[in-house]
Length: 515
Image (cartoon, rainbow, N blue to C red):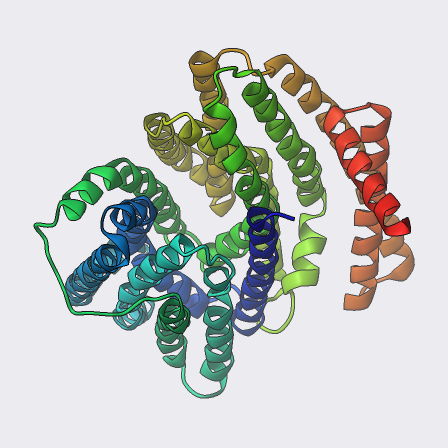
């Protein structure tokens, strides 16, 4: 196995570990606070630094690596290290300035991000925000340190930084219930700091040496500002989208923000576990194949990548729709997370599930455009998504409450994927759209049948076994297994190419083990 393949597999493994632990964090929050005032406050306050600072941090970290390599080639390790320290120190100064301003104007910021909060809820949200906001400094530093380590071909260590974050936050959640509620925002601050400090020793092992040094006139700083512009806009519109959803949710019934958050975490767990892994593997191939004069192989790889995502995500979409309530009940319903919270979260999950295919394809499609050196199209597409999402939010929220926000997000993501495919067709010509449409129809019909079978099995077993956590888990597990068998059977019968590739890979693995 090549070094790149080993790094990819290692990154997938640690990403999976981090996702599982992160999901465990949501389970703990749900069990301890349910869909309550304090869960709404904590989620809203935690999102504020993410929205305000992720834009800058992501843009800086994304442009860091190519400029680091350029400095390394031109002036060796000394120049590259000087560049690293300059960017790190600029990030510290920016973080302190932005955090201090946010601390001073916390009340105004909370009014924007959670305009439905009033009285004690609003007062507590301001206190939480003023504590958590300084964690944004460490978010920026963590992203820069992550990029530095990746430039040194160290991928696993940055991938693990979610583990100390989640452990500290879970501990804080438990202690906050037993001792004091303010341990929760303090824990969030310490958790964000841990993501940076955890990586520092590994960076030093790779040759990093910190120096207090800032040069705003450095040519690299000017170039970085130019490079980050489209990335900043792209990330900004995504964060605005999140802010709008949370703000509108704050005007609804208590627990609406929490219900959307738990449902969104479930959606993110699925896409993060599978789509992020696929994206990490296919992006280098996109870049390599797009540089070839003959684009036939490149277009064929695009078709296979899109089909693979459809095959994986489509059954999950229908499964999440028909089994939303039992899924949420098994995962969350305990402690403060009551039947009402389950109903609210399950309904949000069902509407979020509609757009899983759009979310799944977006990351892959964006990488395709980046591989042909087009960052403008995804940026414009993200802007269109925000406008559509806001418009549909305002329409659907009247009839569906928090479910309307989830539906708007789903529909906007599907429409944007269609627009991205049209743009890609104009850019590179035919890339097998007819074949993709055929696969879409086959997976859709197979998934509908799978969903019907899964629901029938669940209802049958639920009637036989009765209520209770263990019985619920058995009924749900058997329903998912039955659905998976039915779906796999139809995929083989319908002879989809990508399924044949997977079965051939499994057969070759078995043969190797037997030999």
